[in-house]
Image 1: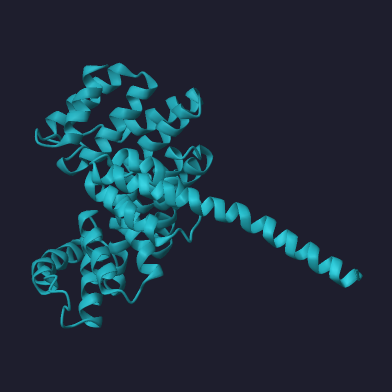
Image 2 (image 1 turned 120 degrees about the vertical axis):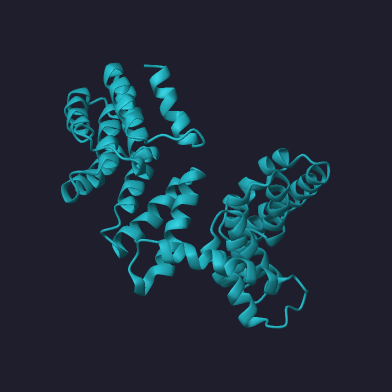
Length: 322
């Protein structure tokens, strides 16, 4: 047998040895999909997700069957944030599918991103003006447009890029609320770079970094905020929290004193609920019980809290445990 033939046979054997595990994996996947489908049909979405999520996370090019079954499971749980992430992937795979595009627009709306949802619905209508499946896009647009118009008008962004930056901001808030800190870091970096004077983007970036365990980077970001805006109470409170979490008690005490100074002399006002609550949390972490009670009393006199706010209820909690 020639050397060339031997080499060819080795290549064929190698190819067959590689293909066998792949076929076995496909059989396992099909079995898994069948089991997941049965679980979803039985109303056991959580158990189905335990099977499906690893399949979707194992590769960026996950089979559409897996992604669509994930949609069914998330829909059953009414968990719209991961549902929206899956529709995003499907749009990338099938940009010319009207149902996928419409489903994604609805997912954005359900996930608390109305500005981006309107843009997605408008894109669908522009591409398929006759609404081929009678989905009701015209009615949805009519309902959404005045809401989004007001949201965009009230946003603090530069007028030339207001809608685009509002979309980024609502995406970042949705990511933080759903503990998707990787996405929150990415989106808030973009937002802070696009509009450096929008301090909440830097605060949210620092918060996402800290929650993902990147305390050093979070501290660096928040120090930059304080340097440019020394009176930002929310940023001061975050700095205290990061020092406490890093075990740097002396630095935390010093930062807390600087934070407290911003709350004296009638500096508190009704629009400071988030900042005051974050400050109470920082003082509670530090074990400064007397300071917690004093700050709460000052904020209450200034009318910062209102009974219907869950954040206000959280502030009462910090006082209760002080």
